[in-house]
Length: 389
Ligand code: MG
Image (cartoon, rainbow, N blue to C red; front, side):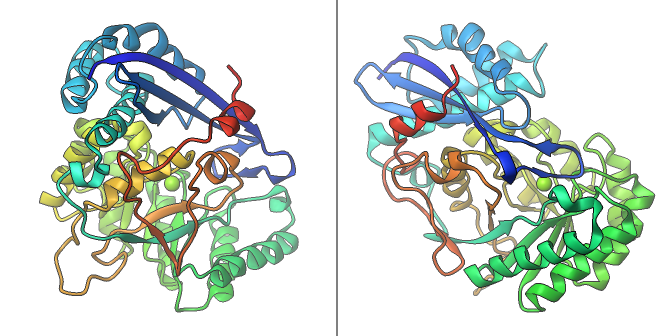
């Protein structure tokens, strides 16, 4: 089975009134870069990459540079392809655009390999530890009302309640846009809304210096927060260590890190308790396996970051199905030693409409697809609706 054709698809959906903010940026739209790889026997695999910044440079890296190297090559050798492409781009692409392009190609080739063999990706990786995964809701971003404290807290409370009512046992909220004091009030508001039975995670999107992060972290500990994500900028390894040593709340990070080499520094450097490789950014499924192996030897739990279309979510679920409880116990506890899947709840039609099968929450879990490859089917009519190129 050889690679016959590679096409990229830039998808873009304006959010209108549903736009939102993290500590770093406004989100007026959702975008994805999908890659479609077709084999000479007519099978099709899908991958995704380039979700953080504009998707066009990632599309160009694939269309103009990487795809021509792959046409006519074996379509079911994703690990070998990864190593060859990374060796090719090492001198100019150790992080960023080229690794995102590689991620998309890698995911598509795993999908294609699974379809050729009639087996799901989790089986190709050696087998699953679970057939459904506890999902955590990612929401409680900032809305347009973030400058009006009373309105913000009222709407935040209402939003948090919707996740509790939907059956989520874990919620992740945002901090970092406002002062430590104002954001501590947001955390207190959400904790009150969801009660003590729902676990609360907090994500700063690297808004703080180490000293401010420690101040925020102490406030989070008062509210029983179970992880503090990206407290400082990803380049600041020493800051991560200072924050982690000063606080009891577990530190999570890695969504802006790339390849096993980047994660080596984060994990072996004692920076985090939980690593969050994004499969569509950090190097795809092939690199996820290596990052997870590295993390597990340091006792660090791997919980992928998931931010993208249904393809990104399917890839995250397939990979996460293969992560054993860390450490092993007879009855693993979600977050404590059992991995959980990120289920972004902000508006994104590319996540909710793109697949024929679209994922839905079942008793607080997402079900691991058992079909071949990623186990999902792209609805090409929906693809056309949101495609810009
Ligand atoms: Mg995050």
